[in-house]
Image (cartoon, rainbow, N blue to C red; front, side, top):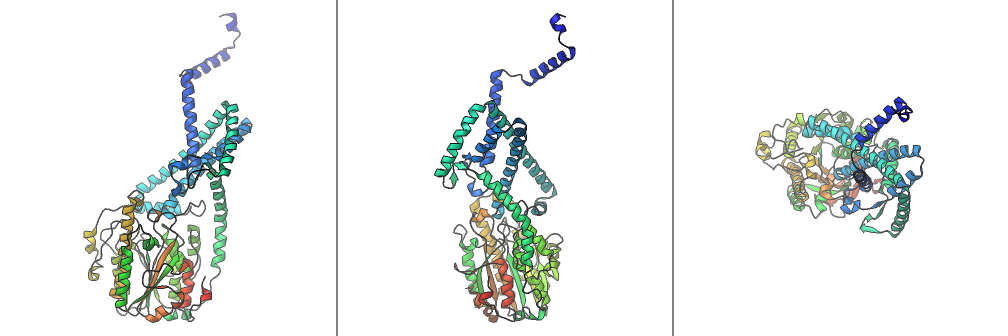
Length: 576
């Protein structure tokens, strides 16, 4: 041992050897190779951050050029991180990375909701929908698929947040290594961003070169959270106003005494089915023929439009809105509604002496909400006793549902019945579609065996050719409408009143993103005094609403209907 060696404490020598060993293991590459790897890593981190910032939240903005922008958040975030002290910088960079990842997940949810439901994701009011989504996926694809999808969604979400956090941290370190160059670049970028923004420079219509979408999204989500938290109070205040809550049964629906009243919700029957030039116009012709055939048989009809509380899905929200007279556009409101004592149309009929039933072919589990609505009987999937082939989401054809209802509730000598019946053959994916058969055998499950075809999950409409999806949609709605109109001609009499309406517009895959939420509604009756009661509504004659037919909010129908068919006629000043 030399004198020099003897001056190094043994433990220090060990530490130096260990450091040397670790260094040699961690950095086996030459200097140039290490720099190359570092540059590639920094470049990938920049791409991750830019993609996260530029990702749009609306399907119509999902274009390649939309990703080629100069985000304000990148410039501002870089400047803030450069001027912070080291300790704060680590915390802030991690926080910004997590926030960027969370907002990216929210934007993906917005894209999904906009594609399926024609609206963005609500971080407060849409959380209860997760349970319904799991149940739907379980029913359509099995328990294993639903569990796998849930795990995959969590893994993807965590991976996005982790990747964003790591990318922001890496860019921060890169900026510190090149502080002087980064400072100059950020200065130029700030001036350039302000200049481009003020000048309104765009890559293409609707795609600004200088973007600030992440800031707007964060502000929008914050406002949405506040709005969601106050929505319950707003709903309770609206529900407290009910002019019909205490009306005795003998003063309700007096103009409909002795009549059977059937309310049929035709799944996904939206205004676009009649007005969108991309959708087959055969439904228009079918409705015009049906109007003439009904007229020849002595029936009259009036039609208009209602603005639904939902679009693309959420049928129960629309049904709750229509039947309760309250605006139910999210799951939180629906939960509060069915926990209340609100007078619904079925409960009003029950109070007035009708037998009230729900005919619900799409219901496959316990449905406690039936008691809230005032139904005295429920025919669900099991109660309708169908054993034929399923038609994708629709377990049974609409004609079978109607024929079974006729047999169970409208036999000779029956008491007046009021029924609410969702018709589900027009539920996505709209293929395969049943065909009409003779009514004498329509209640026999075996008669539909020859109509079986490939069953698709509802989400199949997102991957199939849009033109084919629209064609399938048109055929499915035509079948549902033909079923109910044919039922009226076959079993209708002076004591049958039928209300036919859509629950919501179909998916934006069919309509596009700006189709609105209007749905057609028709009242059909052989008794002209029934139609005379709604003359003041100024609805269009026939089953197809005119272009300028009245448009009401869906929650307005309950009060107008109870007014029109109560002791007092409806008046214009009661319309809202």
